Image (tube, rainbow, N blue to C red):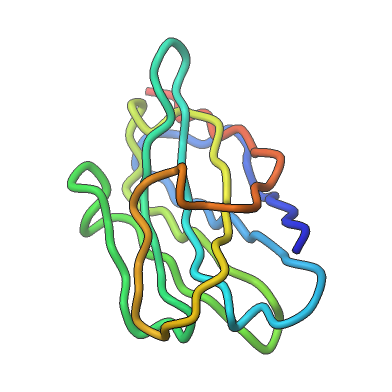
Length: 126
């Protein structure tokens, strides 16, 4: 599967942004998905993850209550919906996919993911 992340840009603190990640190829609904981010000088970290059918999700403490990770399997797209953005959310955001034989499994480690999008930069100004 090939992943194309988009939607990044410059936004003021307190604002909102939605990042789509479009997947090409077959059987998108067999992939668990994740959004990671990497801020300058920091390691890449998991922001949110979702299982194959979208009923289970995980959020990092730093974004819980502000970000959501809905997916639309009919459109082969997963989103990162971000609100109440903070300057510390500034980073390059990556979507990732992992083929999964089970419906409800979430993946937390970047080493578990098989496919990666190219990243999209989100800059939050204070």
